[in-house]
Length: 162
Image (cartoon, rainbow, N blue to C red):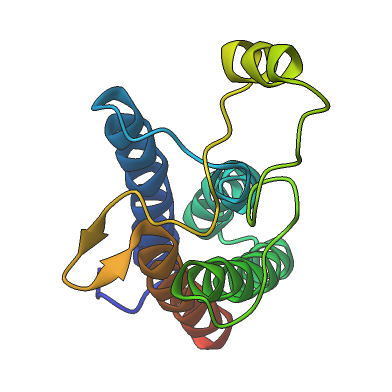
Protein backbone atom coordinates (compact mmCIF):
# COMPACT_ATOMS: atom_id res chain seq x y z
CA UNK A 1 0.00 0.00 0.00
CA UNK A 2 1.54 3.30 -1.10
CA UNK A 3 1.66 6.53 0.86
CA UNK A 4 -0.83 8.17 -1.50
CA UNK A 5 -3.53 5.53 -1.36
CA UNK A 6 -6.91 6.66 -0.03
CA UNK A 7 -6.61 4.22 2.88
CA UNK A 8 -3.24 5.63 3.96
CA UNK A 9 -4.41 9.22 3.54
CA UNK A 10 -7.56 8.58 5.61
CA UNK A 11 -5.44 6.86 8.26
CA UNK A 12 -2.96 9.77 8.34
CA UNK A 13 -5.81 12.27 8.76
CA UNK A 14 -7.43 10.20 11.50
CA UNK A 15 -4.20 9.67 13.45
CA UNK A 16 -3.16 13.34 13.15
CA UNK A 17 -6.59 14.61 14.21
CA UNK A 18 -6.71 12.29 17.23
CA UNK A 19 -3.14 13.22 18.17
CA UNK A 20 -3.99 16.93 17.89
CA UNK A 21 -6.93 16.64 20.27
CA UNK A 22 -4.90 14.43 22.62
CA UNK A 23 -2.15 17.04 22.55
CA UNK A 24 -4.63 19.79 23.41
CA UNK A 25 -5.86 17.77 26.40
CA UNK A 26 -2.27 17.08 27.44
CA UNK A 27 -1.36 20.80 27.41
CA UNK A 28 -4.51 21.42 29.43
CA UNK A 29 -3.46 18.74 31.94
CA UNK A 30 -0.10 20.49 32.31
CA UNK A 31 -1.86 23.70 33.36
CA UNK A 32 -2.31 25.58 30.08
CA UNK A 33 -5.96 26.54 30.38
CA UNK A 34 -7.69 26.96 27.00
CA UNK A 35 -9.47 30.18 26.15
CA UNK A 36 -12.91 30.32 24.55
CA UNK A 37 -11.45 30.41 21.02
CA UNK A 38 -9.16 27.46 21.83
CA UNK A 39 -12.16 25.38 22.84
CA UNK A 40 -14.00 26.37 19.66
CA UNK A 41 -10.96 25.42 17.56
CA UNK A 42 -11.41 21.84 18.74
CA UNK A 43 -14.89 21.53 17.24
CA UNK A 44 -13.70 20.84 13.66
CA UNK A 45 -11.52 18.03 15.00
CA UNK A 46 -14.46 16.54 16.90
CA UNK A 47 -16.41 16.56 13.63
CA UNK A 48 -13.50 15.33 11.50
CA UNK A 49 -12.46 12.34 13.61
CA UNK A 50 -15.60 10.27 12.90
CA UNK A 51 -15.59 11.40 9.25
CA UNK A 52 -11.96 10.28 8.91
CA UNK A 53 -12.90 6.97 10.54
CA UNK A 54 -15.65 6.53 7.97
CA UNK A 55 -13.23 7.45 5.18
CA UNK A 56 -10.95 4.69 6.42
CA UNK A 57 -13.82 2.20 6.28
CA UNK A 58 -14.93 3.42 2.85
CA UNK A 59 -11.35 3.13 1.55
CA UNK A 60 -11.04 -0.41 2.90
CA UNK A 61 -14.36 -1.43 1.33
CA UNK A 62 -13.80 0.36 -1.97
CA UNK A 63 -16.85 2.62 -1.63
CA UNK A 64 -15.66 5.28 -4.09
CA UNK A 65 -18.61 7.69 -3.92
CA UNK A 66 -18.81 7.66 -0.13
CA UNK A 67 -15.03 7.94 0.12
CA UNK A 68 -15.00 11.02 -2.12
CA UNK A 69 -17.78 12.57 -0.02
CA UNK A 70 -15.81 11.89 3.16
CA UNK A 71 -12.60 13.40 1.74
CA UNK A 72 -14.53 16.43 0.43
CA UNK A 73 -16.08 16.93 3.87
CA UNK A 74 -12.68 16.62 5.54
CA UNK A 75 -11.15 19.13 3.14
CA UNK A 76 -13.89 21.66 3.93
CA UNK A 77 -13.75 21.06 7.69
CA UNK A 78 -9.99 21.48 7.85
CA UNK A 79 -9.96 24.47 5.50
CA UNK A 80 -12.41 26.19 7.84
CA UNK A 81 -10.33 25.09 10.82
CA UNK A 82 -7.22 26.62 9.25
CA UNK A 83 -8.99 29.93 8.74
CA UNK A 84 -10.25 29.91 12.33
CA UNK A 85 -6.78 29.01 13.68
CA UNK A 86 -5.23 31.84 11.65
CA UNK A 87 -7.89 34.23 12.98
CA UNK A 88 -7.11 33.23 16.57
CA UNK A 89 -3.35 33.52 15.99
CA UNK A 90 -3.95 36.98 14.52
CA UNK A 91 -5.86 37.95 17.65
CA UNK A 92 -2.91 36.75 19.75
CA UNK A 93 -0.46 38.79 17.66
CA UNK A 94 -2.71 41.86 17.89
CA UNK A 95 -3.44 42.02 14.14
CA UNK A 96 -7.17 42.39 14.81
CA UNK A 97 -9.48 42.43 17.82
CA UNK A 98 -10.90 39.21 19.19
CA UNK A 99 -14.29 38.60 20.74
CA UNK A 100 -15.16 40.89 23.63
CA UNK A 101 -15.81 37.90 25.91
CA UNK A 102 -12.14 36.99 26.15
CA UNK A 103 -10.07 39.95 24.94
CA UNK A 104 -9.62 43.59 25.81
CA UNK A 105 -10.15 45.32 29.10
CA UNK A 106 -12.41 44.17 31.91
CA UNK A 107 -15.66 45.97 32.68
CA UNK A 108 -15.56 48.38 35.60
CA UNK A 109 -17.32 47.27 38.73
CA UNK A 110 -19.81 49.62 40.35
CA UNK A 111 -18.10 49.28 43.73
CA UNK A 112 -15.10 47.69 45.39
CA UNK A 113 -17.38 45.01 46.78
CA UNK A 114 -18.65 44.16 43.27
CA UNK A 115 -15.06 44.06 42.04
CA UNK A 116 -14.08 41.57 44.76
CA UNK A 117 -17.11 39.42 43.90
CA UNK A 118 -16.06 39.42 40.24
CA UNK A 119 -12.52 38.41 41.16
CA UNK A 120 -13.78 35.54 43.27
CA UNK A 121 -16.26 34.18 40.75
CA UNK A 122 -14.89 34.82 37.28
CA UNK A 123 -11.70 33.54 35.71
CA UNK A 124 -11.36 34.52 32.08
CA UNK A 125 -8.58 33.01 30.02
CA UNK A 126 -7.67 35.71 27.55
CA UNK A 127 -7.90 34.87 23.85
CA UNK A 128 -5.40 37.55 22.90
CA UNK A 129 -2.57 36.17 25.05
CA UNK A 130 -0.90 32.97 23.86
CA UNK A 131 -0.44 30.54 26.74
CA UNK A 132 2.64 29.03 25.10
CA UNK A 133 4.66 29.47 21.92
CA UNK A 134 6.53 26.60 20.32
CA UNK A 135 9.08 27.54 17.65
CA UNK A 136 7.51 30.99 17.55
CA UNK A 137 3.93 29.84 16.98
CA UNK A 138 1.14 29.63 19.51
CA UNK A 139 -1.08 26.56 19.65
CA UNK A 140 -3.60 28.49 17.53
CA UNK A 141 -0.89 29.04 14.93
CA UNK A 142 0.05 25.37 15.01
CA UNK A 143 -3.62 24.51 14.60
CA UNK A 144 -3.71 26.61 11.43
CA UNK A 145 -0.60 24.87 10.08
CA UNK A 146 -1.89 21.40 10.99
CA UNK A 147 -5.31 22.13 9.53
CA UNK A 148 -3.79 23.28 6.22
CA UNK A 149 -1.81 20.02 6.10
CA UNK A 150 -4.88 17.93 6.87
CA UNK A 151 -6.96 19.78 4.28
CA UNK A 152 -4.16 19.09 1.79
CA UNK A 153 -4.20 15.38 2.64
CA UNK A 154 -7.97 15.34 2.15
CA UNK A 155 -7.58 16.97 -1.28
CA UNK A 156 -4.96 14.34 -2.14
CA UNK A 157 -7.50 11.75 -1.06
CA UNK A 158 -10.03 13.24 -3.47
CA UNK A 159 -7.52 12.96 -6.30
CA UNK A 160 -6.07 9.53 -5.37
CA UNK A 161 -6.88 6.44 -7.36
CA UNK A 162 -8.40 3.71 -5.17
